[in-house]
Amino acid sequence: MVTPAAGAAHSRTGFSLRAGAVDVTPSRPGPLAGYEARRGAVSTGTNDPLHATLVVLGDEAERMAWLALDAIAVPAELARRLRDAVREGLADPDVFVVAAASHTHSAPRGWVGSIHPGHSGSIESDDVDELIGKVRALAADLAKTEPESVAGTWGSGNAVGLGANRLTPGGPHDDGVGVLALRSVATGALRAIVFDAAVHPTVYGAVNLRWSADWPGVARRVVSAAARAVNESAGQDDGAAVVLFLQGAAGDVSARFTRRGADSREVARLGTIAAAAVIETIAHDGHELNGPMRRLSRVIELARRPLPSIEVAERELAQAAADHAELADMPPLDPRVRLSQSRVDGALVQRGLVAAAPDDVIRFPISVLAIGDVAWVHVPVELFTSIGGRIQSGSPFPVTRVVGYADDYLGYMVDEAAFEAGTYEALSSYFLPDAADRLVDEARQMMKEIR
Image (cartoon, rainbow, N blue to C red):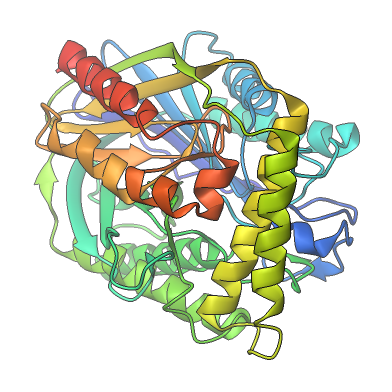
């Protein structure tokens, strides 16, 4: 079902907005993406629906859109088809579109196939066609509505307890939640909310075989309900706000050390923590975004890291498996067990990388969107917190948000500490840590060009 934001007479002030969401939960069972331990097991039902959410903004010079999908990733070809579907549905071939995944580990594998060497899976064309058709229909429905004039405000809060560094308790992570609130110029009602946070949506583990958006889905529903209540209580109108989630630099951040379980109650608890941070931020209004909309995108080339021989990769896998076997008597949710299993998984992926013999040069898309003094940098990797922080610290914008899992999927980009420790993320990465230097420099340069 499509849920577009309510329309109103267009005004010459503010930004123009079209926004909506559509349920894209597959109509048939299929394997779930995210955990190799599932061994291709097929979904048994739905815990909560998967959504595609579209926010289209414009001013006198630019038209830009975020398409956020409850999926493990949006590999290059899927991202291209999603962007094309939005443009076709809107009948606007020139709108700039960023396609981003939430990275839930309870979405279809058939949408993405094998997202990385060493991962199993194949693309199911019928499932992809169904998804693309729903996204195109969402955009087409929005194209039939009059764009609404909205004012944008920016604020940020903290979702303490949502996640933590998943490699080292007390290690670097960012509790920050960025919130773009878009209100009707005519009525003041909340029309759309775009928020970002950086925590893996992996509360549900490999034993879960039901579709789920994980904690971001709960957060969206709670924020949407709160926005509706605020609109109604203020006597503005009864329209609900569209809520879009962008996943941040979550490469080394999850609920591994913060979760109390792996069931729907824990998903609801953590999603509520995120939602509370968003709602509190909205309540304090933030500051109005008055500047123009700008955007820039380019593809850079990064060197692929040298890979070990197949013999070395096999030895590292055997050692990781032996170390994990020593923890057989520990509870499966103990963080040490999950960390050990992740090292086995990393060694498996590294062996897959060696066998795949990927190209020496990796094409790496980057896009920057800016509204006033806030910039969003979009990258196609699972970025470590420290690298995201470097992009932010060198930005010419007062506020910079880093969004991962966007417009392709190129695995992890890790820092020096993770590489030296031989973590899952480092073993499975295409890149050496110094690739981050090039990314940081390029992102800063792109922001300078549109500042």
